[in-house]
Image 1 (cartoon, chains in turn orange, brown):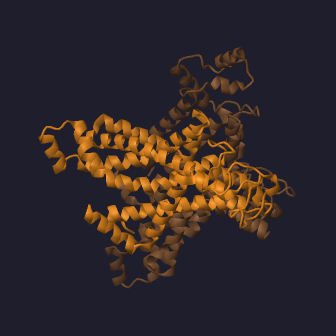
Image 2 (image 1 turned 90 degrees about the vertical axis):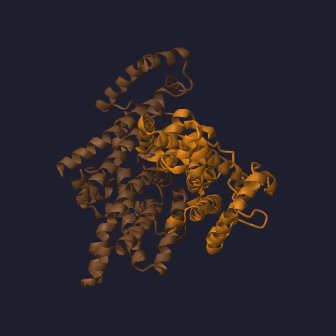
Image 3 (image 1 turned 60 degrees about the vertical axis):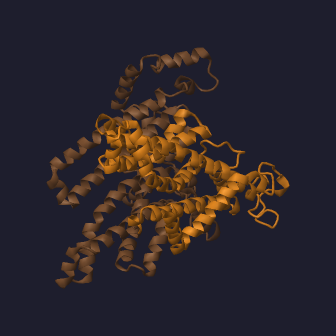
Amino acid sequence: MIALLRHARYVLGDNSVTGLAFSLFLLFVFAAALGPSLAPHDPLASDTAQALHPPSARHWFGTDDLGRDIFSRIIVAARLDMGIALASVVLAFAVGTLMGIAAGYFGGWCDRIVSRIVDTIMAFPLFVLAMGIVAALGNTVTNIVYATAVINLPLYARIARAEASIRRESGFVEAARLSGNGEARILLAQILPNILPIMMVQVSLTLGYAILNAAGLSFIGLGVRPPTPEWGIMVAEGASFIISGEWWVAFFPGLVLMLAVFCFNLLGDGLRDIVDPRRRT
Amino acid sequence: MGWLIFRRLATALPSLVGVVVVTFLLTRALPGDPAAYFAGPAATAQAIEEIRHRLGLDRSLPAQFIDYIGGLARGDLGTSLTTGQPVVSEILTRLPASAELTLLGLAFAVSIAIPLGIFAATRPGSWIDHLCRVIATAGVSLPTFFTGLLLVYVFYYLLGVAPAPLGRLDIYNSPPPARTGFYLIDSLLAGDLATFRASLAQLILPALTLGIFSLAPLARMTRAAMLAALSSDFIRTARASGLTQGKIVGVYALRNAVLPVITTLGMVFSFLLGANVLVEKVFAWPGIGSYAIEALIASDYAPVQGFVLTMALLYITLNLGIDILYGMLDPRVGMAA
């Protein structure tokens, strides 16, 4: 553990970009946790006298067409955006990992079924499949989470399957088997903890993608309903003002969205360097 | 060669079956009543019942599935509620707009990413290598719709060099006589240079947006594959034999490095087809993506189902094409068969 921490500090110290990403990440977590109490203005209060004001000392990121403070809306939206991304990734992680290690460990028909499911999902362009799922299940935030989870599932299932099948015949699994552990116990108590670090890297790599995906879905009008602040829908609301020059309405939510995705991608790369140094590029 | 293509076709078959089954299940087997969807919000219980019967929704699931397959075989994807038009004909008229945009975006991405990756790999640690790494990380982090809006703001509003982001042609030009459905090709065939220039002007920004998005994975993969190829033994031998740097990089290394890049193309297509929907919304592009968005907002299910199926079929076909191309470029694949 201590060695791992020392190694983590070494990698972070070596790579200042990862350190920067980590502090950005803390900022996002902070905003998501305390959002509503941090916001200087009410994110839903409209004030038509203040409509479409450019950034100023009072409204740092300007105001939208209803006079709502964009800075406050962005901060409050952090919880929803991060929540959707985290929930869908956790769901995809839990289901995909279990499917994958079962397929890799047992092989046979279990492997064939899992591989068929994974291949079928991968046969679709993923964003398009997510659109179809949301359309079929109904246009709600919960279904955005499910749709994002489904399109992330193949990644987890594939990696977990490969890692589990490598370890199937390894010494520690043989030892556990000889000392009388059942198959389910070997799977959950021996193999799962062993592949967990690799899977956690995958989590942080897919978080950014999940945020992008959820924001894309709400940009085209799915899931989140208009008065609710959410980054994707805020960009969509600001899109019509771009051609008339009110750039700040779409720019700041888009910028924050981009920073969040950027931060998760860098963090994922950094985490991978710590867990799996061979794949450093 | 023919045998190879046949084998690839056979491997695509399970995906095809999977895609058809999933698009069927998405409408029929999920919570929610498709009959109520098709009837619209103001329908009475009796009207819903009637529609249920007319659509065959009161029959067993397997019987409905056979119906659905029969419809597909006849090229029948149902009728749109909002426009009253058959979904197939609407998708077919809009498909060229999306295809033209996507192909141009891809061409842009490939023409930037591959030289960038090659230069980055031949000069590791130089500024172009760093540029490649920054682009590879930033490119995947940029939300496509955000890039599109930024480009519109800079090139339309600030600089005034791009036309308004409102579709395939501005109001001063009429579409060229349809032959391929691609405005660029059609206008050239008609010898109408003004229309060609106008449609190219409309295309550049959305294609650039798509290109920037798909550039990153291609550049990253080209760089990694070129680095691997350049450090291999046959390159050392080629160097020792006194071949020129251009011949070593351009012929020996590139020919080997291009294989993993082609494999990445499959993933890039998945991104592109999805991002296409978002870009079409930003630029009011009259393709199948914006058709699907309009239908989604109106809870008009048949077009959405048709759209998902069309995209999936396109994607499978593209992957098949990639596989065949791979087999042609790498003779080892054919021999292993």
